Length: 356
Image (tube, rainbow, N blue to C red; front, top):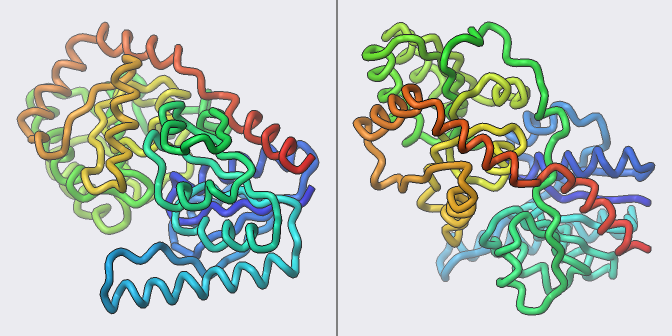
């Protein structure tokens, strides 16, 4: 079976695509990743040794303006470009992982009558998946709650496909396993608001109560500034623009402070890392808040809105977690009960069933 996986954009779309691609190749199928060309895609696929195609990708226009007309033109060109390549290569099935890079391949597959399988990672679906679902043979879901948005179209809950090397990885080198370790993540592209406020809070808390170390994924823009802030206050910290070895980071982390993208939530569950989730307030359809609520209801995380976040609140929260280990243990136990480990296999079975 020849499979195209459209998974470009951010790590939240790329990582599950890579996980499914690896699982399909292990089952004897040929897989090509179609990516939209952002820099983060090169980093996110650093451990992928299969075929990669760079496509012209574009999102949806919003409103009526000169800019939206330009976006619409780019979208048409994207669809036509994908259609020409797909007509030439004729894959047996197209798997679209959501996001702007799914639109061109998804519509091209529909025009060419090639079976289309979708995966929606979030509890609230994005516009790309909602649009393409009318053409899809089936839409796989990361969260069961997302099924309510598809109005009778075929769905299947598979969970979130994850990189198998995450759980059980060796801890990152250069860290002291005896110290309380905070993992700060803003998603695959960083988050400036989190970077600044959380780093300031950590520096203040570490001065009050030493014995703290940090792994901070800042994105490229903030990396030097955040590392300098930690260095100036004597906090042991490793600041990365992007980190391929996320398994090593999760292995050493006692607590994570991060956004609530579907990829981050699923990885926290798999690796058993309790978290304080700060949903991105501008996320489409407020999907990160829905993801965070699902984690909180299950007992594996706490949540705070970004508008309510403050340095003082973070100092108190970090101190409370360090002083009362039982609360973190309860969260780890809750995370262990949230099953998400077989999503790649379930999605592979779904794809094979569609192709027949």
